[in-house]
Length: 321
Image (cartoon, rainbow, N blue to C red; front, side, top):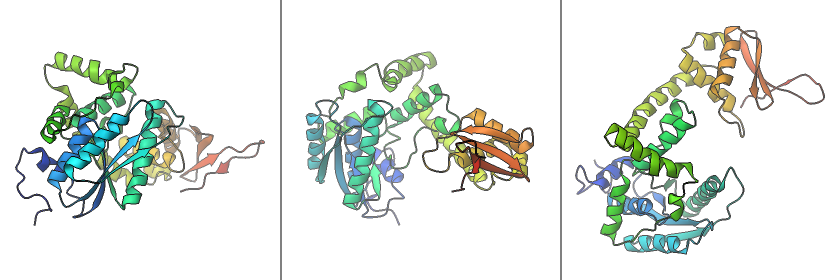
């Protein structure tokens, strides 16, 4: 028996792809649609309502106040009205962070999560496209990311990730909505904009093909590999020095990385830190620093995390999560 809303959908129809992407969402579930007023999120709202009319969708727009964005909010409300959906506009204060872009992203995420709670929704859907995926892969590559970074963003809650930006513009035209163009998307001070406006067109010219589609497809292929490694690493005890030393390095490294990042506000360790821990597991060293005032020590074929104490006292074991 088909999922609600699949009647009349044909292969090749963007709504059919969105329907497939939402297969895990239960019938009549409450969802929040994050709509900025731009073409991608407006296209998201149009396709979700076409693919899954059973869903109880609410359009939510978050105002950051970083620029005059009243027209963005008006457009988001107009999208909701055109689709017969309720809408909410939330004003947030953007705090300090790594930069205004990151701070605004965090504030938006928190506001959307709060809106989902208010709406009794278990899903927040965003309008990231295949072009966004390609940009993310390239940005992560430039940062020196490993396999996980090259898988791009998590596909969960991004039902139009298989669409291209040009398709969302057409959807807006069909809806009779003039989407907002955010001028900050043209600002060369932001690395993502330079990737989109300079790097991707250059790669297209060099490769003589649509590189964004290639990168998005590669991200999906690499994600399958990453998920397999995650599953294998999940069966490996990173504190068992003998088992860790005997395991394939990609699996052992992933198990160590997961162990070290467990706990509040722990960031993923870099490759050099993971390599030092694996050296301790092999017996090449008895201990190593892993950053954050912590160290890994080996004793009795077990690895343990320690935190250096102040005042010259001996290191204290870190409580396992």
